[in-house]
Amino acid sequence: MKFMDRLLHRQEPPSGEIARERLRLVLAHDRAHISPGLLEVLKDEIIAVISRHVPIDPDGVQVTYTEGPRVHRLVADIPLRTERRAR
Amino acid sequence: MSARVVTITSGKGGVGKTTVTANLGVALAMRGQRVVTIDADIGLRNLDVMLGLENRIVYDLVDVVEGRCRLRQALVRDKRLQELYLLPAAQTRDKSAVRAEDMVRVCDELRESFDFLLVDSPAGIEQGFRNAVAPADEVFIVTNPEVAAVRDADRVIGLIEAEGKGPARLIINRLKPELVRRGDMLDTSAVIELLAIDLIGIVPEDETVIVAANTGRPVAFTDNSPAGRAFHNIARRMLGEEVPFAPLKEPGFLERFFRWMRAEGEEQR
Figure 1: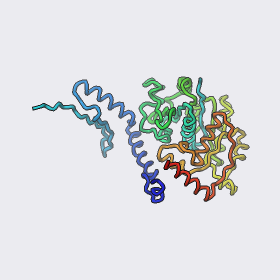
Figure 2: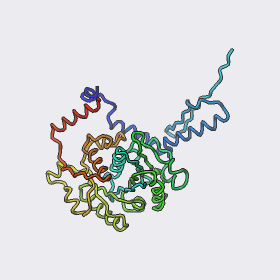
Figure 3: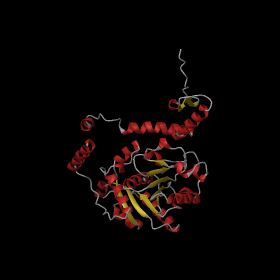
Figure 4: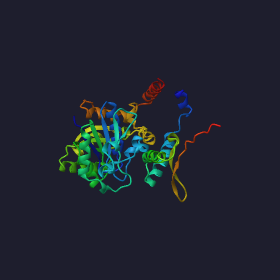
């Protein structure tokens, strides 16, 4: 019940918290010159290239950008589709 | 069918151009208009975060101008509304990447498919400002009821006239009725008299604008905040409605309480 939630301050995180989280993401992507939208494009193109050669599970592919202390990385996680051999 | 191109500018920075652009975009789209908001602040984009669309950007204005994508590909659609789009600025390029004729060409290409193109100008009076004004059919000047902001607004009004884009219309943003009543803030009539231009809106200072910027959901999405109502009034005036400029007053305690209760009721429905 929203009324009680508001009285007890039990809502979703306060907007200042949301602002901090959004900024963390935006700044990381700004500094790397890689937008989240671009990551989606990269993902689609990687799927297209790899699946020409190897069967993969396109729904499981994840392309993420991570900031490390020295190196920032683009990480592509590509699950392969392996055929179970019936014995 | 051809869109009206409205450029929102101010001279001084920090007076609320981007907030105004985002909210007018939302208010017009909620009234069934097909709207593109265009961020003309190359290198310092912010309209995307104001609209909460920062995670959906793939291409930007510079990509369009330099031919790396088609115009349609760079438009980010706001899924919360039928027909609201963002054309983002580039974050990583310098201002010289876009010229005035590029802005005119981009806007001309969009005109056929939309009702309003809202161009968010960068602060200042240099090339970025000129680029933003170049495609404009109309110009809105945003100011605050403060000496520095009004002075800069006056300078910009002169430049708009010189470019043949006038007469500009004025939005007074962040007015504090309490301060005006005490006599410690320029009131609306003083600002209009000093600048000698027509008014299109008065937006009161409102804390919900800060919360809206935090969450990326402009106040105009609801009309239960004073600023949200003010933005909808501007949108209605843009659509030709006669909307009187309501005398702004601080709601009393009881009025605030009832308004809060009403908002609660609406959320539960």
